[in-house]
Image (cartoon, rainbow over all chains, first blue to last red; front, side, top):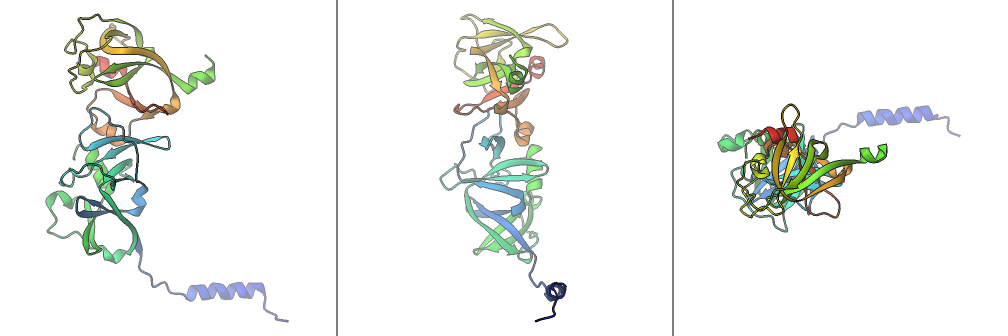
Length: 170
Length: 135
């Protein structure tokens, strides 16, 4: 009969685990979407939910970029259209459009996007700093850029977007 | 009304303006009386102008004067469209404004939204002192 004890086994297992060197790069989850023909992304931890369909109630006295409010299981959230803020042409809501429920800057809101592209885990290193050629209005909102499916993707700062929107931009 | 019931509902005077259903807390409203056929949307004290609602060209239907209790001044009359109803709204159906809407709304005194199940239209609740002090 073996004289090995459980303590020894567990100790060996712990040592073996410590010997494993994690060579994985830090990964980042991105929610990638399209506005018109341009790709954008939010960090995954900023997006609580993706709604393919929701009844939006228009509220009078709102700016054109505030589409209305939605009822999400008993909670009311606003729905904003980020197009104006990003200097993109307005598009009408279509069957492919979705609402991303995001939180940032101590606020939460729905964000209307023209089309969901993907939710992906990518190496942190795939995100590059914003290029110097980025238009002025985008510089404060873009955290970085990457290529996805051969398309440039701008990763947006949701904290900044919401706080700027609350201050009257867009 | 029992204590439990009073906590579960809020008494609201609901009325119309510009095709929307709007409301004031009932405790701030002394009463309502018909305004007669001569009431117009341009009339002083019309609710739409006080709230900053978009202009409405349709004539006010079943117009009524609401007598508003003032906090530190004399009472005030506000012209609204009917029907004017006293409703006990379930507290669960009354929602604070989402922060971005609160920051960007152009309506004076908008405080909350009412969404009731099976009713596909919202009711906008206003803060009476803010509205009655706006000009």
